[in-house]
Length: 202
Ligand SMILES: Cc1cc2nc3c(=O)[nH]c(=O)nc-3n(C[C@H](O)[C@H](O)[C@H](O)COP(=O)(O)O)c2cc1C
Image (cartoon, rainbow, N blue to C red):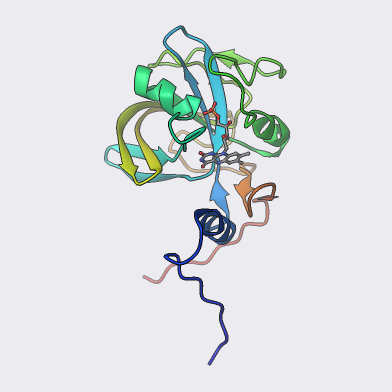
C-alpha cells in the first residue's frame, strides 16, 4: 500500500481545513477584483478562491468571505449594492501591488490609490479597469450562493480586455501570458512560464 495521511474534515477546526485545502488545491488563479460603492469609491482586492465555470453564458465565480462574523468584505458588499465588478488577472510585475491591496482598509478607502496604476473606463459597466493588468473581465453579478460561512459570487462576463499581442483576433493565445498562481497560504505563489503540452487522445 502507498502510505498516505488522511484528514477528516469533520474532525478538525476550520482554520486547519482552510490551511489544508488552500495549500493542496493549487495553483489557483487569482482574481484581482475591482468594485465601487454606491458613492463611486473604488475598491480593489485579490481572491484566489476563483475560477471560470462556463461560456454559455460566460461565468466566473469567486468567494469573498467576511471581515468578521457579521460584515462582508468590501468587494462582496459593493457587488451586492451595485451588481458590477471587474476581474483582473495578475502577472509578476503586478504581484506586489496585488498583495498590497489585500490590506484591510476601512470601507470606502481605495487600496489602489497609493500605487502608480492607471484606471480607465470599462465598456459596459461603471467600474473602471486597471490598464496595466494583462486581462480584465467586465462582469455583472449573476447571483450569490451562501453555503454556511462561505459566499460564492457568480458573475457574468460581458467584455474581455486583453493586453495587445497576448491573443490574436480569433482568441488564440500568443506567447507571453504568464499569470501568477496562488500556492500555499498565506504568502506563496508560482510562475506559469514553464508550460508544456500533452496532446489529448482522438
Ligand atoms: C493572493 C490572495 C488571495 C486571496 N484570496 C481570498 C479569497 O479567495 N477569499 C477571501 O475572502 N479573501 C482572500 N484574500 C484576502 C482578501 O484579499 C482581503 O481580505 C482583502 O482585504 C479583502 O478586501 P475587501 O474588503 O476590499 O473586499 C486573498 C488575499 C491574497 C493576497
